[in-house]
Length: 396
Image (cartoon, rainbow, N blue to C red; front, side, top):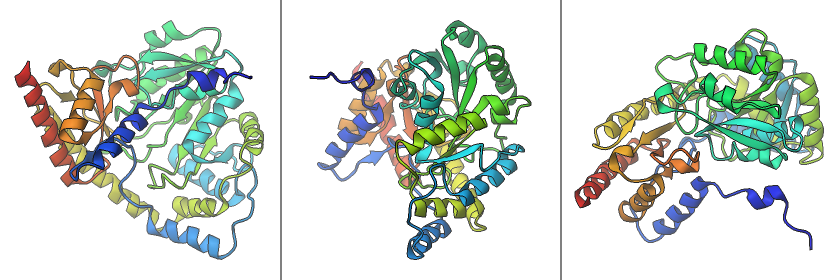
């Protein structure tokens, strides 16, 4: 009998999902569970977007779409990218529509990697990031993102990791799980590194619109000479609160986009047609931006509360998140390791979060809080965390 493939055998379940399963099991036995576990906006999609999808279905716009996506949606993406990046992306040759940002990553690595090729991935990183190169027959090489360096790549660490098999560096800004946003000077240094080593820079930008304190979003595609070396991964899930809709896109060099289109044709045929029409409304509808501004303002208010309350708990500390909706909490002062901290908190205080080790092997001293939940839950959940830490400290 044929054995399971290397990729199928070596992949592990996401720590996020494992703790979510345990959280749901415990929640059946109590009525006071508070979840900081899943990175999903607690808002619904903008109402005009939902209506656009309903209208598309009612009008019979439910047939197969072109493999690379509706031309109308790709044109809307092109116009949005010109607004964001100040760069023109040709709708017919440099953009492909995908089933989510995750699918965009899968297709990208399938298009650029051969067996044994390597991709540099941060530690910490979103739990699926290191797995996508493996699914394409490649290998993820982890490079530390240190708290003292704002969870950003250091060039000396990249130089130590690069080999003749390296094909790309994966960047995620704003970042999951840290909430860090790469600064212009750091981005310039990263772009210089990938150019010197003739690599792709795969830029996962699914949180690009969720940035706080008036900070500017920088993409490597904005840097002179980087457009043909940058592969942009985008999703409607976070910015537009459309997590279950499964819609995203990839923008990059024409030859790569052509390859992705062919792989897509042979894997899923096309993206849901009615959802693509909703995507057009999300990108271009007049009612969308005010709704997004409201969401971001709410996330920033919650960020401020999380940051203040966490740093008031003895033994805990947190760098102020600059974007997304996560806080990466340093628990080193408690003497506990991440999995033990998260497990005890969940089982005894009914607060769910994710151990830092779910995002990288060097993150034993961290846990991730997702503040994509109500202010009431945030305040009560962090109060419980404070009681938990105090109780554990008293025992030692």
